[in-house]
Length: 349
Image 1 (cartoon, rainbow, N blue to C red):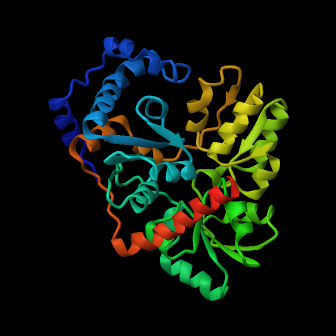
Image 2: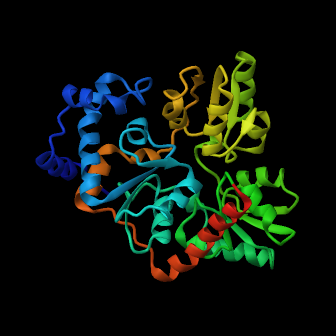
Image 3: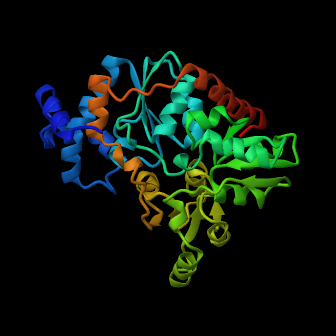
């Protein structure tokens, strides 16, 4: 675990990170992307970190890949590419930089390392895990294969490299249905998200069996809560992530991956919208859509929120928090991820 006292002392000796209105004003173009959700006083605190990180990226030939669940000052202030798990996995195969800084959770950084074995991959906080990824092991995959002999295993990218290596192919929430339908099998094993699997089963012709894992953020939403909100404000469009329960999905006006949600809101521009997912999503797109009023149910991912500007600067400055995946595991995991990417491209997803 990072010793933040040491981190702050080292960074303070190397960089001027004092809150600065002058720096905030100098970075006004970046601030304009988030000024609906980040108060000016907070931006004066963030701006020195943003400036230092962006300068250091150039010096280190580094690129920052950030998930949609990052906070606005990271998402808009220092990220070079943002997206959902599939978009970031694909982007990881395309970047030419020497260093990848993965602003997300650990399995995402592992995926970038698996796809870029020769590059340095950093995650600003090694303890940024994932309850869903931790719910399944390679032994669990073997258990499912024994129950359903011959059935291919489709593992969500929200899994460790070890689990990916034990699987036949990966999927994300944006391509899960298409991946399952494209496999030459009547029965498909999905791990580890039971709700994503059930929602896929409702849309697929295949028999889908699943491991009983779940996301601590999305499982908290209930159909009763959504019905109550719809009764309170029928005008609000409810948009859910497929890691929510099938009952929640049934109440939604649209269900999609994080990128699908972003695309839907941009396309339809409802007067009011509720994003039933991690609460930073609405914050990150609100400045792009001033005509949309976002209701903000806020189930926050405690793992995603471990990533901060301070830790990004520290990791870039020191090269610490490097992600390593053993070659034997990485090779097999790479096959499962690459099959997903190749099939997604073939299917035009």
